[in-house]
Length: 211
Image (cartoon, rainbow, N blue to C red; front, top):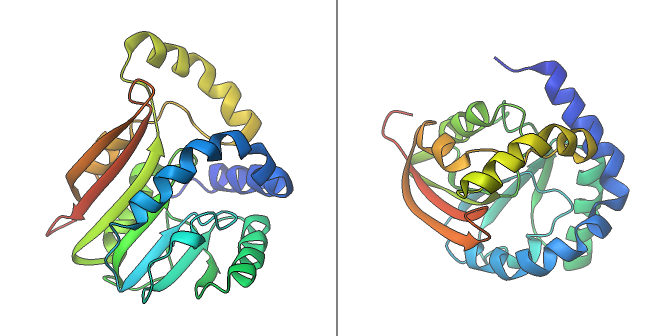
């Protein structure tokens, strides 16, 4: 069951920071910009869903010939994504949408992609289960995510700081996303540690036969 209050709080936080989001992410994007094309090079399609499109930072890496639908929870983010799509002449169907309750039929997509999204989905297990619903049998999930460090001391510090970070920017820094994927209708195929004591990971999973 969706926590409506938490979802609205998340939408409000990201609506508030939407005008500044790209500026806030300049330093982080120096790292992420090398990882995004790697992730998108694994996308096979042809029917692809991007969840949490944000301001459209993945658009330069969309594979040729893919039929891409991209959703975001926040109108302010989606407006910026539309502007970026126009500038890049990217062919993409942009829609408002909540990862926890997508308005697509079962088995609609071949691949589902998200980058640094499940830190802010209020109920990540619900969202991941919903992605399993809309992907086709044998379809895949491709993620770049930051999560709780595998270093016990750093992980404990992240737990302490998490409430403050959530209030400020809406993102949880101590999610256990690999475990959440494995418990939400997906079979893990690849988990690559991208650095910083396991905080950053690339995850590839395939839909279980019975999600």
